[in-house]
Image (cartoon, rainbow, N blue to C red):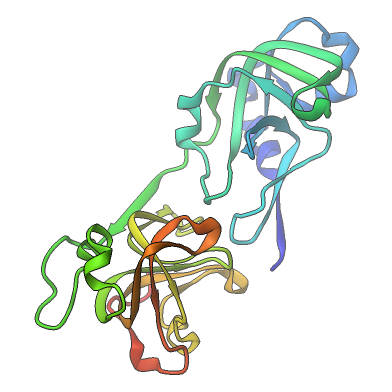
Length: 268
């Protein structure tokens, strides 16, 4: 996979906002002249990143082309008290939250600040607002019987012991991004189809036939795959399956048998 730098967007956004925010600073202003702003209340625009319990403001963000593994660019500024409600309108690829924001608060330099005392600067936030507002759309299956010989995903999740050790046929949204392999109730994407993530009820799923993946929605450089499918495989319930043991059930398909999976929707 390739990495993508989310840097020029903040420059374009800054120019567009200059007329209505003449007093606003940008992250480079604080990093170039930290002593000038030390101990002062500032309004600053930059790239927000929340990951692994850390909240920072940076020049930009670097991610894999599937939106995962977000990393701050340049010397990040530690944030304290960033309002949770602002993050609902930012990018949420699954392992982080990031996007361009305007922050108000007291700037301090000379650290150390933050987690592991790793940051030279911080802002004690009093308010914040998103510069970009990410709109997402959802695709979900219905909770209804699938017909004779088939079991709904909802029944599998709600009563995994009943179907443990059985070969079952079910339907749902397959989602793969090299870290997560699941059959889910639905998938949420940004309006342009980027940053998909599974939503709702889900089970871990392995062995999805590669030949069928190409008939679904495939991200750049095969960074993700998702789509509504019908699958047949060995169901196992009552354990801790998948990434971090976070899934109570899993479905094992035969990767060499294209008939074990079929797409139910055309590519979007």
